[in-house]
Length: 414
Image (cartoon, rainbow, N blue to C red; front, top):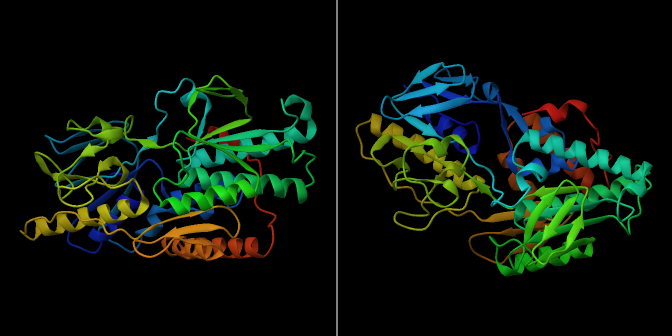
């Protein structure tokens, strides 16, 4: 099992307790709840609130072993996984759930100067930078072109919308509660996307609600706008305008290129995703399954490709685990069928959108509560759930003090 994300954990859980030796390999010894990374980045939650030790998760499964390490290569012909340091693991069945990485679309300077939000290290580094920038704006407002910091969020999908909403709240808290002397009329959060609407994975009414809510809270939204360059000082748009920015936060999509799954000698689809059979196995290698963000997971047999969502990762990982058990029992594998449970996004305090498979879009405070409830269900660890629940409840009643700490060692994290 390669990868301790949603897909890898789901596959491992399915195999736990059975007469099969399972080794889960990951370069981190913890699982990260990716949907809440933006709250770590904007000082709403602590890193430990969204991470949980893998060994603790499977501590009561005697057939599951965790190996802390990074996979450097996979030899599908010899059934070997090579770790950094040249340690070798052999397998009868392999599940590749190595995830994805930020997609910069070849935009000049984006990989070097934009700040992605895909790992816990990304979130901590971004939080450090945001808080340090606000402190700098308090001490030396003259060092900013507008006399106050401007933050640009690229990508108006769920992550971008949630991050933009949390950023304006962070600015407001720091000014009103922490006493930072920052001009709220000059500080700006700008949300940019090449598309013509926000939340493109949702129904149009959800996107319109998100735009209306963000705009009412002070976010400047630029749809149909392309970024062609990112510099250390800001972004340049396709029309030639240069917008100075203290931080460019990248939420414009993900790719499998550059990850372990990209090294597999097999056909790859859009965004580098591995093309798999209907049962999620590799063509020519039925003992190898690729799941989660790393795979072009079929929506249904012979159908379109599933979006790269946590629910897809969980379901595809679980499916791979079940197919391994079927093979061990001498049965044929089954095709994967995705069960759409809806999509959600929060737009800051007391505002969210919940779109179920059927029925109207739930927006506002009810949508926010629905979002809270679902994330608490999937968050791992009772302590984490309790901490996050208390934090969110306090946020509903009042603006919390929040963990607005600049941690010096965050810049060195992987």
